[in-house]
Image (cartoon, rainbow, N blue to C red; front, side, top):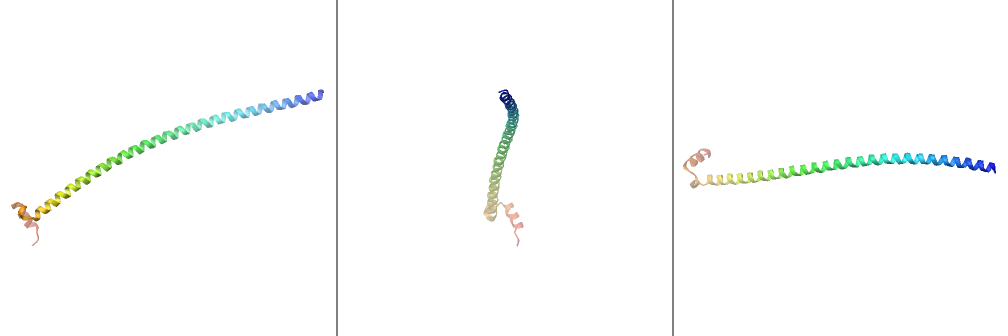
Length: 113
């Protein structure tokens, strides 16, 4: 019986030691998981900040594009108006009755014989 008790005691001690080792391993894994989670949260926050910056950049680019489109439309309108003025002036110069005497003299000098 003493021998059985001794075996039981040794087995119990071995199991207690094994339980301690498992508990230590679990604690280490928990700590590592916590560190990994903190790191992942930091990466997520960093990614969210970068995404926010990208959206701000996109908004800025969109605004610049809208300004450029407005300038292009304004330039197009001005060019169209200048083209109309040139056409009116050309048609007036082709009609002798519409010319002033000074314009008629200039037109004669410009025209080839």
